Length: 332
Picture 1 (cartoon, rainbow, N blue to C red):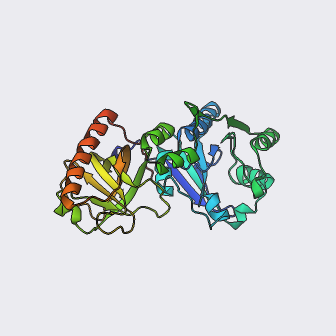
Picture 2 (cartoon, rainbow, N blue to C red):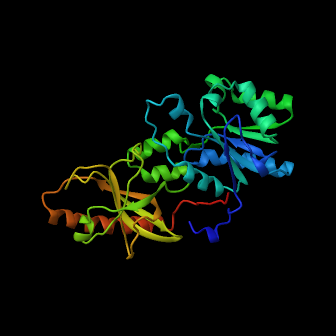
């Protein structure tokens, strides 16, 4: 993002453990509590509730979130398709109008903290919160012993209000991180965008490839995504942000069955771009599905399909307008 034009440049981020957490200017804030993977429309309802409460009390509003994701700590043998890196999650949170975010290390100490201690020692003793907002299904503390009802009860006892936000649905679909993950694993990026409130995006450094795209007339910016990324392999209409400038394009995510069937890679061909991107970190948003990844009978057939893919992508992007995720930034 172009930080010089960023309205969220004063977004404050505090990081630390349950034993040692200095939240600085966020002390006394109303906190929206959750993992916020994807920062989807349901998450933003929780954030909006925290901001409304903060305005009423004349306090700051902040997100209280956790890293790593609790599921990764508690079940390290599992693979979790996380919708955003922590860095990008914070960028999305910065764009919601919050004053900052508190990132707590999810470690053995926090996992063993009872719900009562989490409230008394961390929320009240450590943060002096002015209020809290949570989703209807948020549980916390050792063995998920704390419920929304318990937090509300303890808030009344300890002097802070708790807003519990009801579930959000979109045309009968639950708006949740799990629903977004499911849509992406099926290549349904338009459905994912409807749940998120903006196109799903990835960020990564552009790496050197085998230069095959250049030889075929479609030079690509190649990005290695996290191995847990479960986006369906295929061809997509995409939009990239390079230092604040947007470019339309078409991208392949997969293993290149036509050539080497190798490691999974995102390869984006950006229309009307000519330059060296190696080493630069760029954002790529997924706007539309084009087709499945496949192997063709010849390189010539592949090139014909690539030209057709680009034409379809241009059409999908034209119909999508200027859709792109709203991203913020911050200064520590």
